[in-house]
Amino acid sequence: MSHTLYRHPNLEILEIKNDSITFILSNTDISVANALRRVMIAEVPTMCIDLVEFEANNSVLVDEFIAHRLGLIPLTSHKVDQFNYTRDCSCAERCDNCSVEFKLNARCNDHSYSVTSLDLLSQNDHVIPVGSSDGRPDTVIPIVKLHRGQEVKLRAIAKKGVGKEHAKWSPACVATYQFQPKIVINQNRMDELTDRQKEEWVQSCPANVYQFNAHQRQQVTIEDQMRCMFCMECKKKADSLGKPDLVSIEQKTDKFIFNVETNGSLKPEEVVLSAIQIIKRKLTDIQTQLQDTVN
Amino acid sequence: MADTAPTKIESPNVINKVEVISDRPDCATFIFVDEDHTLGNALHYVLMKNPKVDFSGYSIPHPSDNKMNLRIQTKGNTTAQDAIMNGLSDIKDISQSVDERIGEESNQSHIYSDAQLCHRHDGHPTNRLF
Image (tube, rainbow over all chains, first blue to last red):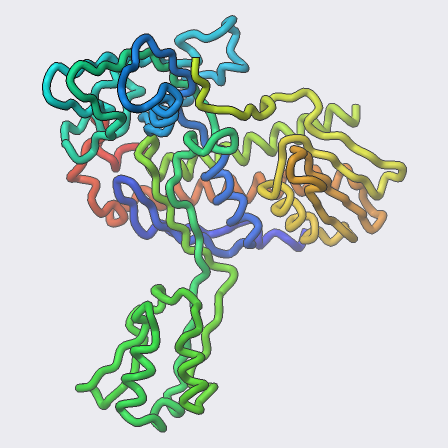
């Protein structure tokens, strides 16, 4: 068939950090990029606290409030594939294959005490609150603050889930793509401007895309076109200077610069890989279904 | 018990995920349960790329319903059923090649900017996952 070209998108990873990844997806359509983005947000499974049973709570926050806060704590989910969804599990209510139990038992005998994710003790070493193994005080998550004599005692059950059921299960804090900008400055028009006007025009960009080189023949150059957010302020400025064709800005719609940040429950590369696996599995499931419908 | 998740979605393994409405082999409406723009838009795109397909379009009739309708009309030299099967395979090919590209790309060490500094909860340095 003639339409084989689009089947092989190109992907180039620019950077992987502990909690973010930047990559360029090219030679494909926006619908494919959008599918990938949507799956990363809504369909990559993680573990999160879903049920909370209180034994004691005389803190200032009501049970529901604390339960909600517990639900929003990201849990390390690198082993999420080993768990079943509770609805698919063979057990009657819940078991170790579909859930992880946490215990929290905090009492304040001092002036005050901050209950944090460090107090949440997991039954499974692989599923623990994000940041609680680093031992760094800035990575723990506060849950509730207790005064003398107050206590919180509870049992929490974490389950596997996806972001479309509840956003707490979404591993991606940020999952965006942007088009690659194509900026061309018309140097002939630029030369017609005075140095003051050039500087004014460079300043009109809120993202500092352009640069005015006072030492190099008063040239205006593009410092970093990736900073462009298509606000078109420079176009408006060019219009007001009476030079509408000073600069041209286009979006290259076949190149997508992805930026994915995670909440720590999964590594950024795990989120991307997992999303692709999920898309493939989804398609295979539908193909089987369709085949069955025909026969 | 305080339940922190008030809404429940249907299981991904529902029995009737796709329903086909068709009175002619060259056109059909496929009703997908629990699918949305993620699949609908991508499928619409690959179907329109197929020269044997005359028309394809999708809609989500109501945002509260978890249904997505996809209409296909072919030029007559193939059935709508075959067209959608090809379309699904095409997206699978696309995903497969993205998957392979990530595998190739991740072997390059220059992309890991702060990896050597940090060891994760499982004891692995971040750049050892692939």
